[in-house]
Amino acid sequence: MSTTLEDFLHCVPVMTGLDDEAIRFLSNLAKEESYAPGAVIIGEGEPGDRMFFLSAGHVAVVKGQGGPQPMNLARLGPGEFFGEMSLVESVVRSASVVAEDAVTAYTLKGLDFHRLYQHLPMQYGIVMLNLSRDLARRLRALDEKFWHVSH
Image 1 (cartoon, helix red, strand yellow):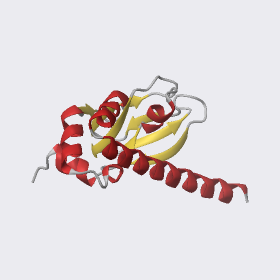
Image 2: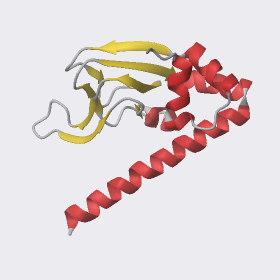
Image 3: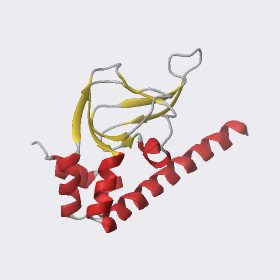
């Protein structure tokens, strides 16, 4: 059974609480991208203007990719997202993301979220709140890992 992009977006946690109109609006702006195993989807230090929503496959988030001691920071799979930090902060990518297997992802640009803000400001607020909650969750998990490593 295949699902539509709208069905997929409804299931992505950062989109929780959005109404059908907002999901439809974003699905009309999203672009589908595919990557082969081993492909560098985003590179650390590159400028970023979009975030990715994984619909198939797995990726590794890697700090220091290609260097003497790269560190895997996370492994993400279907329904998860990455690349959001460059939209929030408007700075270069803080890590690389590498496809572990065949990956399909949908992307939304910062401009797409600005369009959502202009068209449906309350729905934009929901996305930003969900994004903030997820960033806080990730930071909390990193704090725990750091604490355990340092003790």
